[in-house]
Length: 210
Image 1 (tube, rainbow, N blue to C red):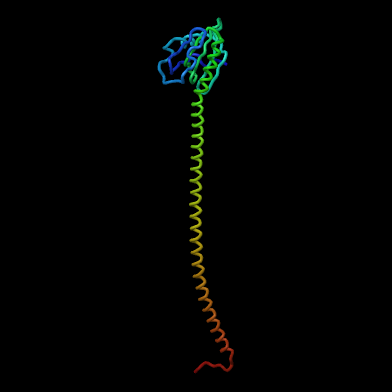
Image 2: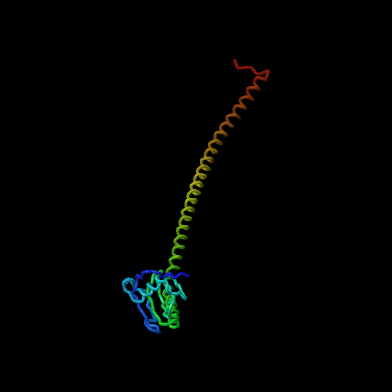
């Protein structure tokens, strides 16, 4: 895997260096606010960047935890080893060792610390993801509620229209029934008058009054 630390510029803290075979600053604090660019601070950061540019390093291990990376690097022509920390793919701190053994110990220690640092990033990412999901669900629920409310309003309007039409129909039916009974009374009266007239016409003894 190609080293992601090549030609990167640190934007957080000035470089800290370790000389000799032991680990110094084994407990590294979490990143603070940016201080000064490591490109200008020199020291082991600039030294490692130069070796990277010259392709004189072999990457033995690299561990990523969230935005943090820890790499163990060995100089090709001797036993000098480096442990490098990166933040968001940018070189942050570099530790120099005379041999691989102490560098491996420092690498394990620092990789463990980056796991701790990454927990906050992980929690933030998870919380942000949950928030985004809930926000989408809330928007979907709001749209669904608005759609259902519209359907209810339409249903209520249709029901009111139906009730109004039914009431109008009942009133019209009542009026028609009144007219029907009036015509029925009229027909029965006319039929009675017709029967009387027919009877008179068919009666040989009947004669109109003088």
